[in-house]
Length: 362
Image (cartoon, rainbow, N blue to C red; front, top):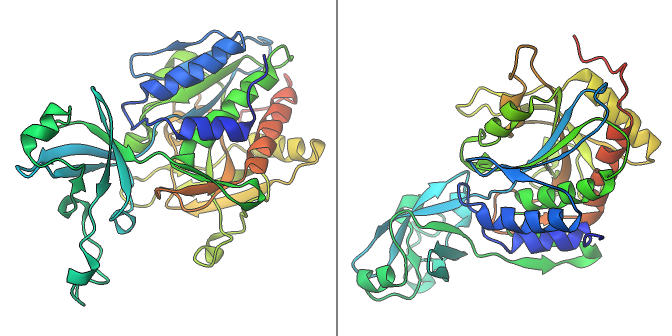
């Protein structure tokens, strides 16, 4: 069985809502693809989905992971009028919220709605350039009363995501909802397909939960697997638009990359300085695969790899591996599937190059 292309997988997964803590439908779609590859898998109590491909016990076991969840909202109040108030879940950009379509994921089914934007004809000059806090915004799903909304399945705690969409852009680029990190999920599926039957280390593939909520959802899976090496697949901030040029040199369509430094710097004193042996491993893999290798160093970004590196009595050798992406955390993000194909080849090549003499001690 051959999986669809990484582009088609990305679009398929983007169109499935999966708020942090509510990843079940995304996990089911990924599980179905693993079944088609004949690969066994299991989920833990948080919902992390793990697939292990056994390898050479003389080699350090590797965990490659990416997160299934997306950011969004939780219903916090239903007004008597039937309008709905939201609580933010994850790093939602408030300045990009008014007039966005959303999806209310009720137990009775998904309901489309929109985040209201005050009528332009009634907007005062003082309001024209003001960003409203999310708590002041409301959702209009068409209901006339609170009872009507409740009868349709809306209640306090109902998960809400951006309205799932995918747009085909020029040069085969894709704009869509939750490219972060459904593109990573698609890439990890293609890596599973590529690694079947290949010699190399024992490989644990993990599609993790709740990254957008607290960056720690993957920890039960990592604790159970005890890897010596952990590789996180996630976005790299593309810096090839006018508002991002000072932030770095990563370009969309420029190929896969690695992070040489990440630090949150906004209340969470954590980040990743990668293991030098893994940096060399991936630099050599890029050379051997004739791939470009982009390099990223950013303050303000963080992944759950930050916490895995401190696990166990010796720690875990860690490296963030990524794909360029524009407009992070917006309702529509942009990715180039060529970068995803390159990412799969890069990780596959690096895994095949791991030998018993790879030194992880410092």
